[in-house]
Length: 567
Image 1 (cartoon, rainbow, N blue to C red):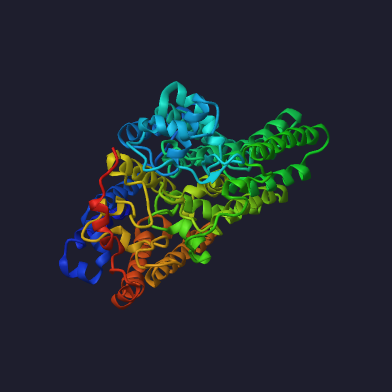
Image 2: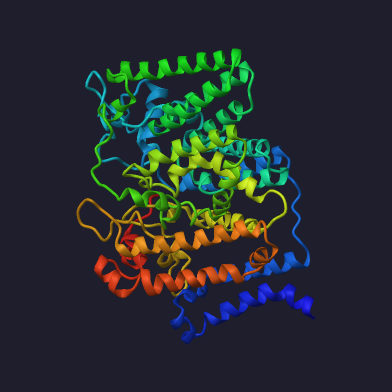
């Protein structure tokens, strides 16, 4: 009887909590239970049932071969992406990337005026109020302020099959990224199953969103992963040249990747010797010369800052820089963890990655810093009108290695939650794209994604997430989020920090590890978080003072429901 109760405890626990959410007196005492009066209640019941089944008969998933991983990743991306691009118009910066690709293909130049006059853009967007350009060439002709690399890559593909062909290309690169993460993880000491798990996480959100939202992120992540894989394995001359070529593509894609190129170039000078070093320097020097020569010919200047008028872009709006790092991780609209919770395992695994040999720790640690610093110091750290976690996509190779190291070996602590965390992110990605015209995956500072409203019960999940990129409480720059949003972020940092500390203890102490075996710990964390948010962070006084309603999603409801989805 005792053994049967142990098997059934998680599903009975989940059922009891969902039933309590239906009791008005209990819900009024704990408003967070209102989350369970919608779709999330069924999610909790399914999770409890899965844990009970795993206790009765542990889940065994065979190790998939690389080819199967690749095929499944491509199929997943295309299943979400092809219906999206067939029903939803291009938006954001992808309009300019596509228009440049058309100009390169049809006229072999970057002068978009004739393309605009012919209406080339009508193939993917109904209309543009004006020619999209942000700066001028040396001869005075207007030109886009976006880097040309992605458009060069898309030009022949778009010529062959339009926007759908671009989705196919990025789906293939995302699948290749997954295999690169798997190889890097195995080389760093992860076992085969953990490396395959990291590959599966790498092709999920947020990467999958950017296989059909045509930005530079997937290409950047793949090029960085390929370059690192070739570079960190003490390569011969051919592989060293390949690493130089892959890494040299990054500045052509986006100027924010230049620090990453500088760091990896320094690593090459430190690690390579003899013919390998000569091969790397030869290719890297040729690519660097081509890069600056392009800007000299087109803009009359030797610097890529010519895209912005030879200076860093003027910040028309400022956000508190101390909010950028927690925002990239936790923000309700653009944060990584709300949309891909499996990466909490990467946070837990970063110390393991950085404790490896000095050479690997230096390589991955410096790359991590080089990618993240331009993001958190940039006024537009949330990424603009785009899917979540845009600027963290290039970090997926490093985060994937850390994730694989954390789940290697016997599952203890947070590693026990790996499958629910992965499945939750993948299911959320499918939900957000199930009806493409709802555009649930797109964020904007004035229009948070509709996904949290779609998942609400009697209360929206958005109430318990920080909206650090929101400017709804401000009327003039500098736009900063209300005090309530900062407090919610502090609550999340405290909860995640506690879980990470407990995870570290669970790897060494069986007693602490037992806390991770059922639903008690996650429910306790949710209870603490909700009480802190309801009683402190979003108290009525603070919300009124900040100019926002107690539930920030409610304040944006009119904006969201009045917006006509692009078709």
